[in-house]
Image (cartoon, rainbow, N blue to C red):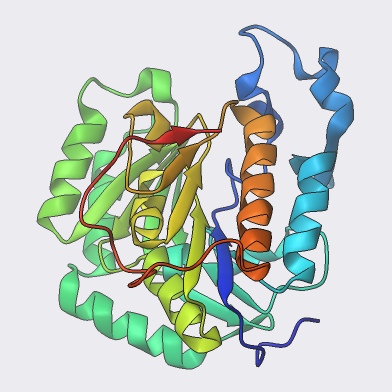
Length: 307
């Protein structure tokens, strides 16, 4: 295990689902439309990193596996996921256990696998001050998400809610309607695959990443993500990368210092992992000097670069 007491000049904070790890459906996003995953060369290159109900659920390519392993060995990898703690613990990331992990979109900070209670209390205070109560949002979703387009409503550790929906059956303007209601109540909505999340505005991955950076003394923060819930984390990073798919890609989202992968799906995830490793090694080798104010939100957007 890499010690949490070590100082580190750089951190590599990354979203997991559809950024580093991929379901079978998400893995083939970069393949030609209509291609069966089992009929592609990609299928033989995938390695399972999560089982659910005794079935493979999430995968990475072999090249991504090697990059993630090296990031973990260097002690710089910080998984930053919207998953609950239980969902996160289903994943078997390669390499040694990571010293820090962020779950529930920043709601929990895991230190050597254990919940940091001080951080949890800090988050609770922030949410109480900035957002309408969880119970109010839960009731709104129960009243609004109809069974003809909703298969499940879920409570994520009483921090936020999400619905599993049939995107093709969603009424026109429904996501915008939910987003407007959420915004008026101190929450925000994010549609990722089949899941529509409603999350408090004060529940932010970027805040948790900043706390980890403070603890380890990191002057350079690298970040990766694909959804609107990742945007603030990417904006506040020194440099960031996103795959050429997902919620951010669909709206052409950009920010200062952002790189976009050349491919989508699991091969895009492979590019993300390699970019994080290359940038980490450059910092550790002294090839990249951290700019003044690294980690602070940049002043404006710039054209995204592509790998």
